[in-house]
Structures are given as structure tokens and as C-alpha cells.
Length: 399
Length: 143
Image (tube, rainbow over all chains, first blue to last red; front, side, top):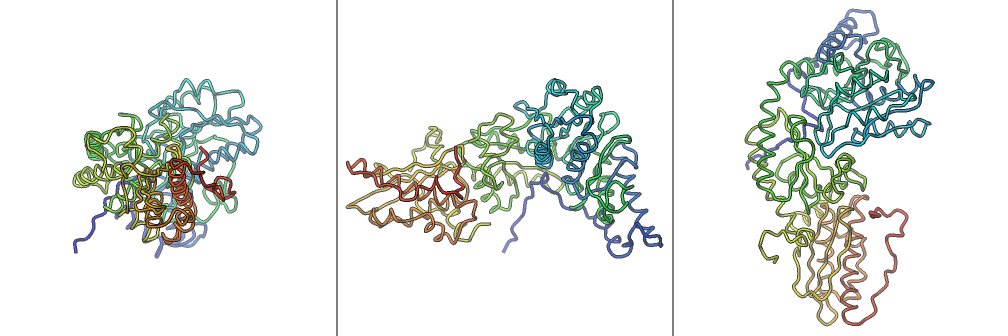
């Protein structure tokens, strides 16, 4: 029997760990397993490995090594940045500015702080998911202590004008945090010229291991600790270091940022062919996110008259891994907060599909999706009472 | 996350389509909530001789519609009225808790189609014994 092929188009959810990354990690499980806080030889090996990863990470971000703090991932980094600034600066003010399209690691953290007496402004976005810098500047008050705006959106791929937003924050002397989890390897980052005070990253989004991330904290930022305990990470983040994970993050970020334009060119051209093909072949489809200012591998599309989960089930049946912004897969009854924030009607948000391309993909994958997806959409539309009502059956009489 | 039976009825849905000049039609749900079911019944001598559906919704909604139309075929209207959402879910070998509202929608669709028929015949519509929207743990969309 022919082996069923798997076409992985969900790189924004997670990536596989690169072979070179895994190979770099393995000795730190078995040989150099010493606790970096100890003083014997194998412990020194562990400590040196962490220091090397810190340099690799700092170089990728334009930061100094002693501004990099390793964490358990993007969610911890976001929680630390936001809660840490809130706790350390509450005497100065209780106002935080973020956006309506952040990852839940930011949104739910802000909602938690609202219960603790903080006030949060959730900036709107335009139809493409862009934050307007004018809106940001207007929202700043003398109580504002933190601005947190994502570098690029995980669902619709929209890239925010981070340098401009950072400059506004700096001008008003407000700390500026960005969740750059989706940006690493896709966009060049330079924390200094972009006026970024804190930046969250997560290794498994750029072909590193899961369970490892980092928070960049500019020197001089007043921030409280999130994880209390031992003196690791220069007394800022307690807990015995995930040495192998940190080594993996260092190797992965180095590889992901060595040639960003070259890496993107291939993925972008496959993605553009996919967008063009889908919009040509499938009527009543609309591209979500910005036509140009979007992550190179991101394609988010809404198909009218059908629901996303049923689309994913059929795609899965064909071996295609994708995501949807429909409520039906999220465990809640509301569809994607990101799509709703762009003004997409609720019923159309239910029919959204995200295909995120990356290193796992080939031109054949794109061909296969272009062959399968129109059939899946048609099959679901043929059984949709909405399709019939709209009078868009395509001229055929319904049986 | 879904049982084999749900996947079978999702991938090979029984009774998809419409019935021309149906004797009873019931449409329930709301596009805002992400699911709409439209049930068509053919009724002869108080017996459902054919049942079809069209559904916009998730895998569980499509499978529930398919199973519900299977369950009411050949039944008298009184018997069909008694086909509960739990019966639909059980016949599907279970639904995830968050998807139970899909089976509720299927039951309501059948009820609405039966009452559509009764009203057309000049009969009193039957009254829902346990209106689901008042249940505490109901996951039905409130739009």
C-alpha cells in the first residue's frame, strides 16, 4: 500500500526540530548534564554551553548577551514581561496599552492584571490587522507604564510597524514589549534601532525544541521576577536551566537568522502561488491580513458558507495539517478574536483557514493543496444551507 | 477527538440534500454561532418516509444531522418526536462535551420540521418538554 503523505502547513503552530539542532542538544542530556550551578568540570561545560547560546541569541536580536534571559517559552516570556513591569512600576502608574489581536499569553495576562486593579487599553486594528501609531500615541497617559504590541500576528501574519511604535513609546518614556514569537527567522530584528525594551521568543517556532524560549530585557529596565527561587539567569529567573533546550535555541536561532532574505524567498514564492491559486479556483474566498505586510509563510483565507473545523477534518483526511479561526476547534464558542478585530463578520470568520508554510514544504505540496482544497470547499458548500440561500450554486440545480 | 462513528457519518453523511415539496421543514441554528441545520421530512400516513438535511457547521454538526435523519426515517411522528439529542449522541458513540449542542440542534431541527408539518395540517404544534436553551450546562450559542 502506498504510504499516505503528510503535508505540514502549520508552521506557525510549531516546527519540527532541525537535525543539526537536535544533534547539538543530545550531548547535553547524556554527557554534559552537570548542573551549571555546580563547580566541577562537567558543570562548567553546561555553563559554557549556556553562555554560548546566550551570545548566539543576543547576536540574532542585536542585543548584548547579558540582556538575554532564558525561559520555558513564549508564554512565560510574555507573562514575565507584562506582570514583571506591572509589579515593579505600579507606583508610577497602573495603565497598560496592548492590542485586540495579541496572542492569549498577552491578552489573558492583561485581563488578569485588570482584576488586580490595572487599567488596560486594547488598541483596535484596521481591516488588515495593522495598529495605527496615531492611536497608540493618543492612548498614552501619565499613568501608562507598559506598551505590549506583537511583532507579527500568528493568525493573519500581519507585520506591525514595530520601530515606529517603539519610537513613540521611547518618546513618552514608556516601556515597550513585543511578542516576536512569529518573527524570528522571518524578519530582521534589531532591538536597539527599533527601540524595543523587551522581546519574547520561543524556540519551537524556528526549528528549535519546545519548552524553551527567551526574554530580552534591555539593561536598565525596572522589572520584577516572575519565577522565584534559585539564583539562575543572574538572579532574574529561578530554576535549573534547561541546558539542552537552551543549546537548541541558540543553534536554532543562529541557523534561522543567518540568511533571512534567502530563506524567505523560496517560502514566499510558494506561499504566493498558493494564495493566487486558491483565490482563482475558489469563488467567495477572501484573503485575511495584509496583502504585503505579512509573514512570508502565512496564508489566511475565509471561505463563505462553510465552517472551518469540517474543512480541517477533510484536509486531515488527505494528510494536510492546517488551522482554523473557527470557534469549533478552540473550545470556546467565539471565533478568532483576531479575525473579528479586523472587522470580518462572525459567520465568515467561522469559515477561515490558516496555511503556514515553512521549510517542510515543497512545490508539490502547493500543487496538492491546490488540487484538494477546492474539492473540500465544494463538498462542504454543496451540503450548506447558506450556499443555497445565497443563490451561488454555480448554475447547477440542487438535487 | 471524534469517535469512528462520528467520522463515518461526517465523511459519508447519509441523507444529504433537500426533498422537493417536503411536508415539513425545520431550520435551526445561526450562522453567527457557526452552525445551521435544515431538516426536510416526507410524511405519509403519520410516518416519516424520507428525511434529508443540509448543514453548515463542524464535523459533529454534520454527523449529528446525518444520524438524526437516519434515526427518524420509518418512524411515526410520535416516535420521531421522542428521539432525543442523547439518543443521537449515543448512536454516534458519543460526542465531546463541547459538541453536545450539535446533537441538541439535530433534535430541535427534527422537532421544528414535525411542527411545521403539523401547523400546515392545521394541527396544534407540539410543545418542547425540555427546552434546551434553559439548561444550565447547555453550550448552545446565545446569539
